Length: 163
Image 1 (tube, rainbow, N blue to C red):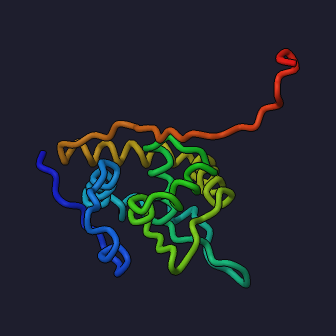
Image 2 (tube, rainbow, N blue to C red; image 1 turned 135 degrees about the vertical axis):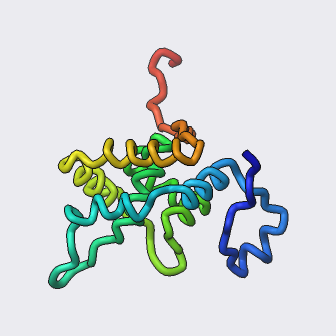
């Protein structure tokens, strides 16, 4: 399959400061999933159980945005706090999910966790990914899970054996 250039909306900053930028494999993958994913059908399956905006307080985040975020979390095997951090770190992921940091923050890990639990409560998670797999097969595609590995510095007390 020939790779097409990702359809990216470039901001003034990106045009000015990223003239040598090369699209990443993650960007290619997410762009292809945007193009071929059965998003409308998946959103329709979640909408009946998704909370509606009622009364004062923050309105819920859009269903498709949370669904796409959940897909990123599953495809790259990320925990709730790590997917939140990855969205701040990865322009490709933010673009796929539909987040513009100039206008809004990334959903926090609690919101992400609540959405995941909602899908679990209604047993929608596996159904959604089965639909995605079936749809991709009709397109002659398949998805393999990946892992984003990060390095963490952990402070450890000095050993008393070395004294």
